[in-house]
Length: 169
Length: 125
Length: 101
Image 1 (cartoon, rainbow over the protein chains, first blue to last red):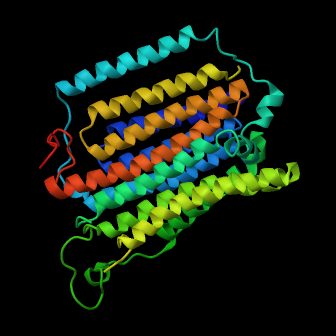
Image 2 (image 1 turned 135 degrees about the vertical axis):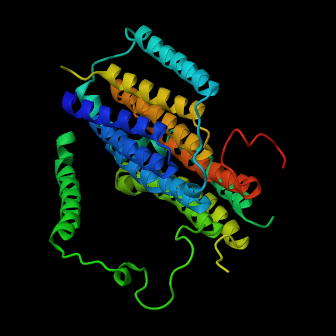
Image 3 (image 1 turned 120 degrees about the vertical axis):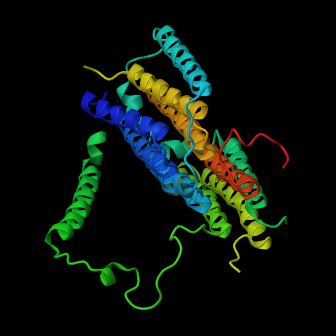
């Protein structure tokens, strides 16, 4: 369905960027590695014909959420703090737990292979992913969840304002 | 499908290449004769004191947070805008219903903005 | 060679695991938040791949909702980080161990 070269390029860069986020000491470079990873995932969405989601990924994640992260790092001036050393028994326990999670995911993946459709129907694949197809579902069948998302964002606005303002309101 | 985006990718590659080329061109071609006066932050006036990485005010965070919320709102409005004609072609009732959905959504988020303004979250004093 | 659904699911599993490792390894609370975002992204990739594979657009709608929740989570979570930092002057999770300060 896509050229293997493009997929493997994006996948390798995405995993490398995720590892870079995990292992870099400076939180600012962590955030920038994550931005690279988000761009790669946006490219993967494009290979899946989900073009609208891909653009939105760049807009919302890389454009807004990561800016907020970088902003808070600058706001708290974290580079002036001593970097956190973190190699102790917790790291070993964390590694074990993470490997267990990976093993579970791979096991589920392997056991579910027979049940999943592996081929893409061309006419369906062409229909999914652009903005008007999404709109037809989003504003009719998913209208109520959509409004609930609005309420969630309202609560987030009010909650963040209450928490971040210096004086109690 | 993906081939539709090839012009976009070419444009991104060109933009990146142009930026890197111009930045490095200046480094290679420009003469550099630094001395102590030139490398100071202000060539005339007071010597700078302290670090440049002061903490920002939390007011900026509130503005950025409001920006995130309204960024998501615009993302949701975009599919409405591009598909409105199709809904209108289907039936005027469908278009009206969809518009009611989106207007209600905007009103809900407008409450948050009003609250923010009322509590002075956007004031810089 | 054909890139099938399984490759996407495997990539998503690897990214999710790296996110889990970030949450468990790192002590900087902001990096932990970023790892949570990475895990959300891995799940989004699964949703889009399966939505594409089944020819059903509902998975992509769910990705929208996940993105909105991620934005709300980032806004509130980082506000909590700012509030904690104001009181304790640290972002180390092993020192943030009290409900009340």
